[in-house]
Image 1 (cartoon, rainbow, N blue to C red):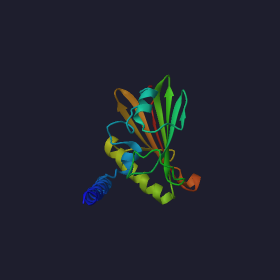
Image 2: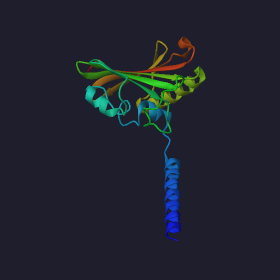
Image 3: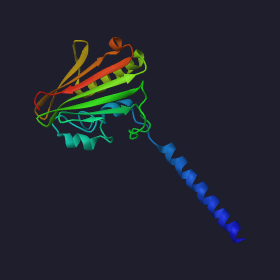
Image 4: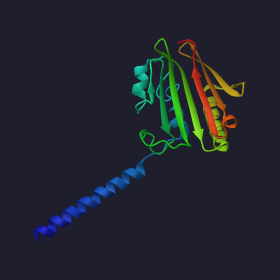
Length: 184
């Protein structure tokens, strides 16, 4: 009889444990692709602003960088909006993004993000979403050399955001986002 009670308790414990895991996976929140690529809007880009030091960038990203040199730090990240913190998962060779943070005199003065997708129509949709995001935040853009450029004044510093679709040049979906300031 004691063996039967222990067996029922063990089965019940295992069953409850699997229900908890199922509940957690169902309550995971999917983030938008815009939030994945550029952040939630609290900072200029993801969790950083221009003018910060490299240590702050390293603490802001949740992954060990691909490259970490004196003047730049690079990351390659998956296009995963369901589990955005799973940055150590294998990178899909078709849909991913690469971020490079550049420093001048130990201050972040440029951020380059290359966004790769499976085709140019996917990139065109993403271009429109990013354009809508930046236009709602910073107003109309200026067209310059096939790029959409927003000029921003933040904390007394001039900053530029440039977005371009380079899919035609590369024969697959590719967007280039550059955030830059000469004031740092």
